[in-house]
Image: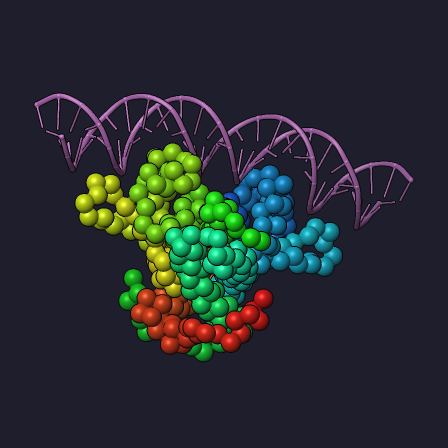
Amino acid sequence: MDHSSDQEARESINNAKDLVVDSIAETMDLYGVTRSAGTLYGTMYLEGDMTLDEMREKLGMSKPSMSTGVKKLQEFNVVKKTFRKGKRKQTYVAEKDFFQFFSNFFTQKWEREAKVNLHSVREAQELLIQIINDDNVSNNLKEEANETYQIMENSKTYYIWLNKLVEKIETGEIFDLIPIDPNDPDHDENF
Amino acid sequence: MDHSSDQEARESINNAKDLVVDSIAETMDLYGVTRSAGTLYGTMYLEGDMTLDEMREKLGMSKPSMSTGVKKLQEFNVVKKTFRKGKRKQTYVAEKDFFQFFSNFFTQKWEREAKVNLHSVREAQELLIQIINDDNVSNNLKEEANETYQIMENSKTYYIWLNKLVEKIETGEIFDLIPIDPNDPDHDENF
DNA sequence: CGAAACGTTAAATTTTTTTTAAACAAATTA
DNA sequence: TAATTTGTTTAAAAAAAATTTAACGTTTCG
């Protein structure tokens, strides 16, 4: 293909960007992030910091949409406010390091999982203990309470491990254990 | 609290189970799984293998709902069909090992992410190379094409690492690197 | 100040997703 | 084979979520 004019080149660059932005959006969709929020992140990732109006123009959507989208991405810790000096408009910048993205995004969720679930397990186990120790309850039910108790007790091991994983990621130790290979020889073999 | 009757105990057991099922559902919601599918998984996790009708009764929902819910959970590799001999009805069983759940659920998504995104990056880079090598294109655009190319090139490192992570998890090596602690002394300090 | 610009909130609309009821096909059993 | 049961598909209804328009409060700058 030959680009005799800048206009064609412009279009081609946009096509290239769109390919990647769409993939990023699809990926984030996989993890429960809205497709439009994913598109927003992908765009910011390739375009650099943007104002809400620039986003609106780029994506052809309303400003409140951009506002809420950015807010959600901030909740996931993958977008931050920036200050462009001399400028009145606020700008926002996407986390450009995917390793950091991974870390911010997943550790937040895993921490929450461990916290919430460990909490409910403890509460549930208290209820079950009452039954197990109650002489007025039939053996059938005591048995069931005990089985359920054990399943829950067992799950704790997982949540504790999850917290450990989170720690390894947050401290960066994970990259000692599984090193980043800047010039992976398997590069092209992976697919 | 004192359980003078089995009826009260029954209720209390159900309360305990519901606490944990709700947490599991909330957690799965976090990862983009429908709340009802999460509830379904949580229920199967605590109740053992179930038929569609048992699920329907337990959750008070329609059978097609159960059917589609189970199907989705099967796609995530966290529920499997089982055969209860002598029984006509099909039964389904949830993955009870959360480590296995983690592995099945996340590696599938990460593998997909790496594959899809690496593919689009390669396609996009081909387009950009054309522009970079085209003498009829202005330096401005060439510059932009090159910057974009570099950002994309850079991202590959991440996807390659992600594939490595997936491999460590699938082979179980991850548990050599980050051991499971069956009786963690920090047990109760974690929260 | 007062006017304009910016970002957010609120309400209304649209779209998408989930859920169900009904119909269907496959399989089992009597 | 006929009748029943089971699971899925399809179409409709209901519910939930995303998007937009309009309105609001703040800030900035003339």
